[in-house]
Image 1: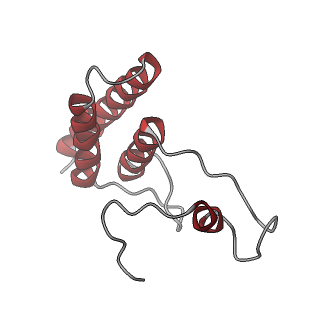
Image 2: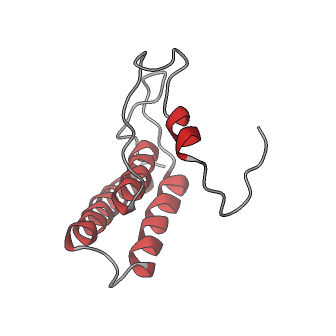
Length: 117
């Protein structure tokens, strides 16, 4: 797939085609959420939960990768720091809740792993 130049914004027609399934209009079509802080936070949160073993893999077995989970949690922290004062109250609350939940889950799992080497 060719590289897209930085700052490239596809036309409305091309953007509309990007969200369509292989079957064309109406066949398996689903609405994607609009890009925004909430979507970004949800994506990072989902990845962190996956690496913390809270979401199953394709095989059904939970994944536990504390290093990768920490990276996603730290990225959420960077997002919080860099957007301070520029978020709506709901966006700020979403980041706060995501950080709290993932940090507490991370600490709990890290303590369990340390207790059972």
